[in-house]
Length: 118
Image (tube, rainbow, N blue to C red; front, side):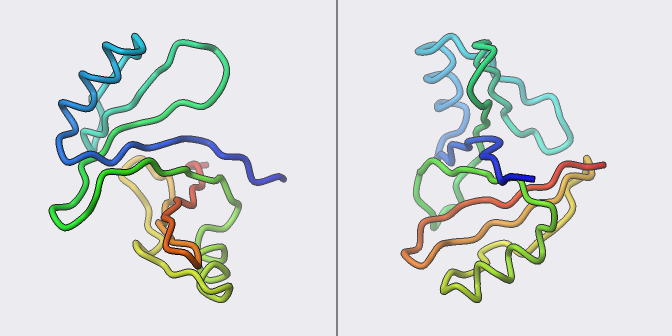
């Protein structure tokens, strides 16, 4: 299995404003009807990757993040730390059964590790 980028995420200080902006600018459909209230973006393009919008924590910054699909979130998070990165949000199961961890590379650039529920 390769390690494809599965999704992008926009972290925003004002997620509703960001959802409105990008939705209107690109005619994206934004839907927050899920267990976390996560603003899922459907581009409607039929190609490329979909995304979402999530609130940035008060001490955080707005930025764009990529999520890479892996077979073992915990092992890849540990490997990222071994290679000089760090685990920002430890591996965890989400309400829908997906697994997720947020890491930062050796330069501090954040990225997500993702495994879909089986």
